[in-house]
Amino acid sequence: MGFPGEPPRRQPYVQPEASPPAQGEHWFEPAPHGPTPHGPTPHGRGPYGLDPTAAAGPPQPPRPGQHPEQLQQPAQPERRTEQPERRAAQPEQPRQAMWSPYDEGPRSRRPIFIAAGGLGVLVAGGIGLAMLANSDPTSQPSTASPPAKASDAPIPGNPGGKFGFAASRATDRYPLGLKEVFKSRKVTFGGQSYLMTTSRLDKKCKDAVVGAKLQKALTVGKCTQFLRASFRDASGKIIGTVGVANLRTSAAASKVASVGAGKSREEYLKALPGKDKVTKFLGTGEAFAGGWSHGHYAVMVWFQYKDGHLPKKTEVKQLNQAAFGATDATVTPALESRSLTGKRP
Image (cartoon, rainbow, N blue to C red; front, side):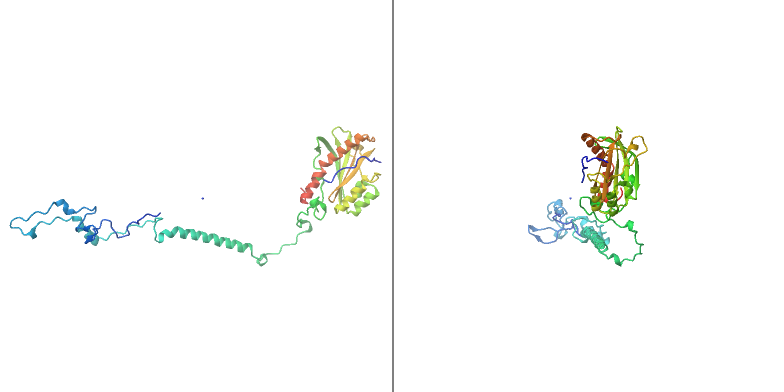
């Protein structure tokens, strides 16, 4: 049964000059007695450099009978004699100090102290975090947690390679699901549409294939599940079954694929007939059959014409296109996801 056909392809941001007078100093104090560099300074100069005796005019000559000592003395400014008394009687109230950024006293250091304090807090916080990060977790008291189940063990890092996690069941241990692989009833690939009519999961993998050698390869390869689904194209003329076997290693999957690609076509995927009036003919007549591996999965196909006639060379290409189209719309995305994550989507 079958024909040689074409083998399936795959392997996919100046301070001021003078400071203000200090407390207790007064700009309007009389100049000290004694000569200055420019000559004698008369007693009692006014606050603006004017001599108060100049306003009384030049000294008058003594009148007859008047002693020179009785000459009228120029009037002294009243506020000059009273000002010291006021200061003695009522001490000047100290002015409230106002902070200035140009002060050189202790207040001018306040922003520096605040900034230094803030920096100290940050440094202390950083040291605390570093000590926490470097602390030995074993010294912290903790309660013992129950041992994790084998199925909940962490997945190892991506092993790399062509198939990543999917290279082995050891890194891709979760079983495949029908809804994971064949999740849509209608699929499209390459501009062609395909309608899924039925699906099935077999835990006895040998029930999903034909041929003693193929059945043995599945058994030796520790096959745990075989998923199949059947499709028809939009015209209803081409029908077929796509299957995927879950084996232990990539080597085992390659072995299964090679056995199913023999020239005699005596080892092949068992077609899965549907209950509809089109795919119910699956398994009768001549077909395009074959397989390939994707990591520890073996992918197999069976495609034929509805009437089962022996396809011509051009028709074999159409069967080939339909088989790869239905597979690339369903199985291939699911297995590529397993290669990347090693988990169910």
